[in-house]
View (spheres, one colour):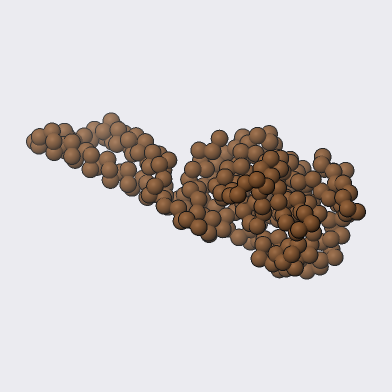
Length: 274
């Protein structure tokens, strides 16, 4: 993992420069403060150096303030929907919490079907008191309420990617295909389609409660034909599919990142995602 260096963030420097320019101009216009006013008896070189040094100080100050704020997370508006991206533990969130499963909604945690150290495995190991109750909730979910219906495959129910099954204060999400070699995988197109269906499903289920998601696809998920999928690309895809989904969600959506991911990506660049 490469730790991201905030000092190499061109967008943050550019925003800091523009804000500083506005502040500098405002000081001169509103307060009448200028190098000529303060340094009237000095020659123009001294005045220019003074103005340059003052401007650099303002730029660096703005940069530090914005950098410190961005380290804690950023907030963007997507068609009126408030989306927060920050570090956090999804299991401590107060609202709907999305947990990714495979297309069969398997619940066996054995490091073959589900790994103990994945979010899916941690959820079942540590937060499910009665596994039979979870399995019953999955199998008895009313299929008629969703636009995307389950089907049978190899004598088992298989769910379209993007399908959500509510369970207590969790939304269980069918995120990946699952093959005979116990590999969770999907293509880039599958991922994008899954996210678009997911936003529709969230809109169907959320009941005016805030929604919390992990960075979907950032665990052991394999992307077919793609050797490496960066964390930032995954995050951009989540935001872009929300933008193109056309869904109207009236509660905040929060994408929670791990400390490792926060150090790896340039979270400030999210503000420029279109």
